[in-house]
Amino acid sequence: MKQILIALLLMAAPKTLAQDGSGEAMTEAHMMALVSEWTSMGNTLKTEADIPAVLELLHPDFTYIHTEYDANFDQEGLVAGLKGRLQRNWTKNEKRTITNRITGKNMVVIKFDSEWDDQRTGEWKHETAQDHVTLFEFRAGKIWRITEFWE
Image 1 (spheres, helix red, strand yellow):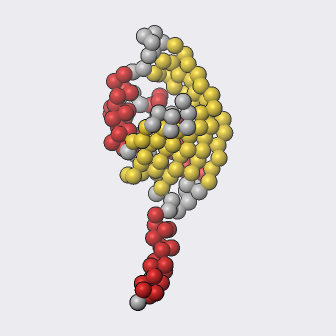
Image 2 (cartoon, helix red, strand yellow; image 1 turned 90 degrees about the vertical axis):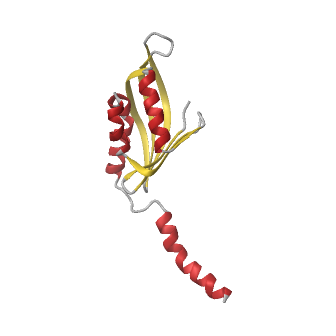
Image 3 (cartoon, helix red, strand yellow; image 1 turned 45 degrees about the vertical axis):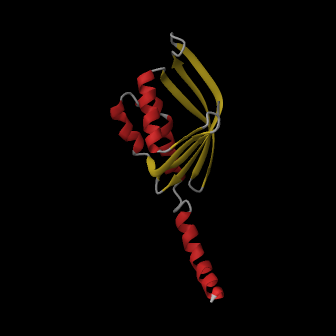
């Protein structure tokens, strides 16, 4: 009896694994379009009314992880963070330039340079950063997880 149960479980395993995988492969063009929309968000997010457009990019099980800042947010946490960012109004004129990318099945890793204006010290200063790295993972045609690897 045990052997029959084990055999049935093993036969069902590939279906279960496939359903839990990343799903049908997305085209590179579709993934890069979502990445471009996300990376331009710094200039398009002006009021809380803009947040639903950001959420349209995201899978219902979305997760945002920033390894250097110990951040791990679901959609609700991301919305709270975006609202806080709008209220603080520390940055403007953000621009990200993708300098390299690697694509695979339902994933894109980008390396990018950034520039922005910042007023955390009380006056506006132009800032730059190079060689930031972000991993985007996708499911069902949407961004499923973003992992940032920069300070």
